[in-house]
Length: 374
Image (cartoon, rainbow, N blue to C red; front, side, top):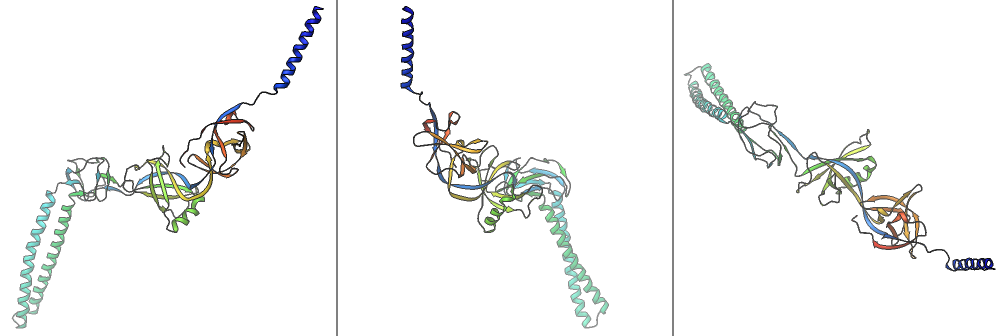
């Protein structure tokens, strides 16, 4: 009897447990916390990205035309100079003496030429009276002409000597920044020496050269040929083109041929560079703006996921469940992806927390995704 009672109790407990399980049903789905962003329409710049090389707009290797001792240096290494600023002085004393000597010869020969002209004039009157022969008259005219030619040669010698004297002061031909001293005070240099005294680079304005694929050539030519201004932004390679330190310039050169080896075409942009952000020899990130495309569907790039079938996003429905939606990415700009197909403006997509999601998952939107500049 005791065994029967125990068995009955166990059977009753089992039936009660089964009844309770039937009433409760399956456990509720887990709610996944996520962040989301709203699909937007924006005007998105169409740009060509490249790596550029900063080059001075002009480079001058300063050399000497005359020889002598360098007696003065009028600048500091790395100094900004303007056209006409003094760079070097070569000992002018030998050239001053040469100028004085040339002027003295000129004064002497001018006096001799005056005497020769007066003699020729007297002989011209005497020959009319047959007081001198024709030969004597011709000789005086020849002497006067020779004396005048000597004067002209002396005048050229004076100009040459004065020009050599002016070369003693070497001044900057352009506005730019000087490099290091390649000669020093007291050095002796030769006339037309091959040595460079200093190199000056023009950095305001400055140029950036870069190459883009030939597939962009048609769009570039259409704007460049029509006289439209093509903006080119440049920033140091460790920054983005939208960084505050970037410089805005203008396309100034389009090469006349595509490089058949690389399939690219060489371009050059000019920048005012007032802030000195760009420096000769530097590599920069270049963005060539071709057009602004209005009404483009964009989402934060972090919302886009990848699979073997392609790109997709998690779309948040009105009941706070999610579904996967395949999308076609046209291109990216900054922190945004431009969607060619798959989304409409106003829909919400998950931007963080995708790893715990599956189609039909319930979500709780904690915070909106932060806005990022486009």
